[in-house]
Structure formats: structure tokens, C-alpha cells
Length: 120
Image (cartoon, rainbow, N blue to C red):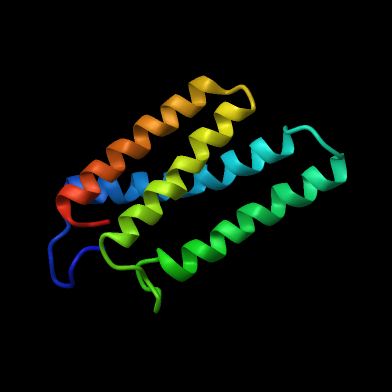
């Protein structure tokens, strides 16, 4: 998260937009992977809704910029690496290697820029 009073550069603004899109993509990718996994239809449907909801709750509690319990560096960076690593893993596990690679590259770019600009 950026410090109070620090101007937002175009790079940081674009990276913040990318972060938001990656967060949404994480939820979609995990839900998609669970829904397309083997198992009972009712269970896959339930988990495809419940697990992304759990991720939203974890993100809101520990990674949201205005969260009371927001993690500090380096823990927030580790949290985001793990979270953003779930999506490509999930996509690859259900036979979507191209989407997994694309997400992984975008997540790596976001994390590198965020870490270098201290806006994780």
C-alpha cells in the first residue's frame, strides 16, 4: 500500500488496476478449476462458490488496503505471492496451460512493480 500523501504515478495507477483485475481473475480461476474438477456435481458447485468466498474473506481481512489487520512487509508480499500463485496452479490443473501462463506472467509483473515501488 502506498504511503499517505504520496502522489500516484501513472505506473502505480496502472499497476493498481492490474492488481484489481488479478484479484478478480483469482476468484474466477479458482472457481472454474474447482467446478471442472472430477467429483460429484453438487460438491463441485458448492466448493466453486465457497472457496472463492473464503478467499475474499481472507483478502478482506489481511490484504485489503484499509483492513485493520493488514499484513506488513514482507508478509503481505508473501501473502500475495501465494494468493496469486493459486490461480495459475488451478488453471493448469484443469488443462488450461495458456491461461495459467498468461496469469502467471501478469501476476509476476504486478508483484515486481509493486515491490519495487513499495505499493504492495
